[in-house]
Amino acid sequence: MMNWSLRVGAIVLCVSLSGSLCAQTPAPKQRKQSPAAVRTAADPLAETRRANAISLINSLADDARGFHDAQLRARVQARAADALWDIDKERAKTLFRRAWDAAEAADREAQRREDAERERQMNEHGSFVMSGSPRVRPEVLRLAAKRDRALGEEFLKNLDEAKKQEADATQTPTPNADAPPATNEATAAETHRLRLARELLETGDAERAKQFALPALNRVTVPALQFLSALRTSVPMDADSLYSNLLARAVSDPASDANTVSLLSSYLFTPGLFITVDHGGGWSSQSDRAPASSTEMPADVRTSFFNVAAQVLLRPLPPPDQDHTTSGRVGTYVIIARLLPLFEQYAADKAPLLRTQLAALTPDAPDNWRTGREAMLTEGLRSANEPARDAVQDALDRLPQAKNSDERDQIYVVAAFAAQRKNDLPRAHDLAEKISDADLRRQLRAYLDFVAVMRAADKKDANELLRLAADGELTHIQRVFAYTQAARILLKTDRARALDALDNAGKEAQRIDGTDPDRARAMLAVLTQTYEFDHTRVWEQLPELVKTANALDDFTGEDGRLIGQFRGKGFVSINSTTSDSFDLTGIFTQLAREDMNRAVEIARTFNGEAPRATATLAIARAVLDRKQ
Image (tube, rainbow, N blue to C red; front, side):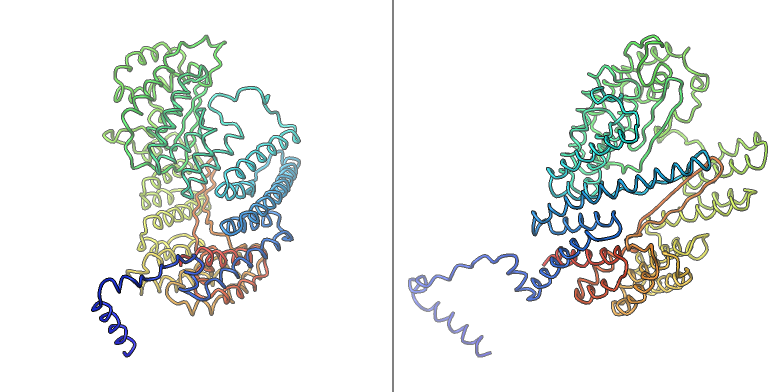
């Protein structure tokens, strides 16, 4: 109190003196403090923790050069480089280049193993079935490109050259390097570039994504339009401008044909769905889960499309023996028939000429296309006012033609999937119960329930998640996912039910065999969600997680993907989802913010190189990225 009184007295004294006297004692200028000084003032140990985090990353990057797993060597060094970029760019560039060298070696070895396995299966069975392992070069490329465009271009060039060398080494026929690329088909270099651009876009870096994509946006290809549709969700004006440039190139290209128009139409009317038709009328579709843009398509962009589309579709067609287009006369007929309703709606002045062209091509069209009953003609284009066909009933209408129980089962499978796509799970289950093959019936029920869990998680429907976790035909790890997702949703609104869901998740995790990697993943998911309720309990149970992980050879700490699949006769469907609850990164990020040193000590107790590296990087990044 005395100091405060004296200070007030001094102020009063100054005010009572003449203004000139007070003006002669200006206040000292405030010196701007460095960010480090600000951090130190707020938390005296902040700089010590940052220094320790940097040391952790550098040590881990050096240790990674001796890791047994070649992919892990590359991945850890690339992630270390990314973490150090804002601190020491030269060191980070060195690590990126080391990571690239390791990634090239890792991908070559992965390719060698796949080639050997393919040859073995061919020799033994005359055919092969296998899924390729993921390559690590794209991850290194994405991290480097995000930080430095020149470095990204360097690695992109290296990747393209390596792919050419691999093709030469396997004597794979490749087109003349000087020959123009096939119409509407992306080259390997364009595919790599646009895949990188989409990955950058997914991280939120739209500007860098555009920079990398631009050289590959001069031709109409599926990857180019996939990128533009994705770009439109974040920067619609930029995407529309690039699309308009693509329209201008298409109309001036003599090789543009009906399939070019079909692909261009996807940007406006069926984002993520691409349809092409060949000379014989065979059609193919390619789709991805492209998010729809919330911005309405500008009328001038739509008008430009119909102008270009009409010019291309109305070009004189050469005789069949001289027709080198990808669509031919039949394909052109099909694309015009598919798009004609859109012309009538948005560009009615051009519809009469297109109807004339359609009539001229009718003699070439197979009967199944002339009737207009092919589902592809309206795939993705059905008007909101037009009654949707009941795909379930369409499938069931084929039952009278089934010759045996196998064919009937396949019809019920198709019908059940149609019901599932309409989110009618009860009907899908009823149809599945009609399948006579017990194994097929059980497999379909399990797949339907897994898809329902994914949808409930996306919709944040805790009640449905809890119902499916209790009654659905799910694996142990899928039940753990359902329970922990429900707990996450209920955290703030119903703590008691959230804790009950976590308790059930823990019991489910204990039912998984100790030799199954899913046991460690399940324990990790439970601990990650439990941290929101009880920090102390998580610290106490972490040693048990480490013990379980150390007993497993395949636990990496980055196993966040859940897969559900159905395999029937001539019918395969695979669905997957990811959850950060199954990754060590999430829990160790939280632990590091509470007690870095204690988290480091626990991370060091992992025997496996992969989980130890994942946990260590998470700890270091939590400290370096923390806002002060």
